[in-house]
Length: 387
Image 1 (cartoon, one colour):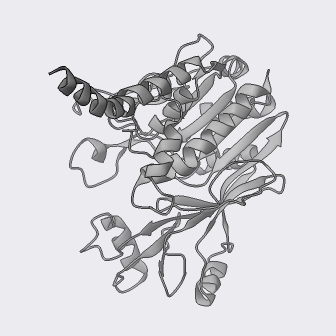
Image 2 (cartoon, one colour; image 1 turned 45 degrees about the vertical axis):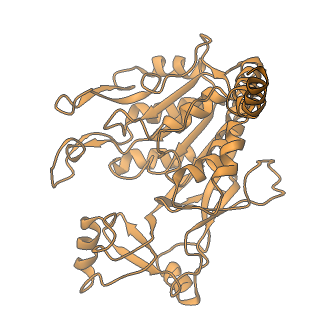
């Protein structure tokens, strides 16, 4: 009996090491990493339900990197942001807790006590988020004057700031958008774009009905199938690029130079299949990454007629007044919130082993291989600025 127990425990030991010993060691290593103070002002107006998918990835990166508030506390995904706070049931919808009503002096003080401002998403929430409503009637959303003042103060005080896809597009008023563009040195071309694995709406339910209807106003019928990219202009114009005919990179690629002079440690190439806005940036911006669809000769000519360049900025930054302004042209923060516990050292590296960069069908692949390491590097820079 004793020999049988010894044999049993001998066989059990590798499993105990794998499922208990290694996670425990990883947790202890993470616990001994030093905390880093980073006071963040996070804006997310697109929170129709309690999955917090438009800023959950940002919060996870903060907590895993042990970036703490000035009080020494971790960031909470359901509390530590400004924007829309959903109710537990859809009937009550939710409440707005943002910067509206705050004076310039109050916002100035907020910024002076912070290290970085993150505009995660400003698109907002709509009636259709809470029921079967055909029209997209806005409940809350769009960039406002208080956020413009926030950006202005961050710029003047030399703080770090991250703005992302759709920060200035619909439903933000044109006057507010112009102020945003002037403060950020970023000009929206009016075009947004997205890749679809299948352009046939009868096969792919992700093709919005409104998109097909918009196209039918300018052409006879949709009639597309197979992979492709859809470009939509704020004037209602729609252009469809078919893979193999108009462009050669099936899924838009985010390219980063391996030996980039800015020192960002990111994959050289990773596919990105979601929404992007196409912007032009001022000359003092430096490019971290760019989008490449590899247009054909005819595709390049179509881009030229649309007023668009061969490559589109993906992640850019500029140094200003001792701080930095970042702009990410993709909807990078939009993320399945099931990212797991943040309290284990080396977890992002483990997930990068599971989620290969070439897999565009799983958004976790883009998060672990590109967005999470990019965020952590930017947060490190902001935390180290005042040390």
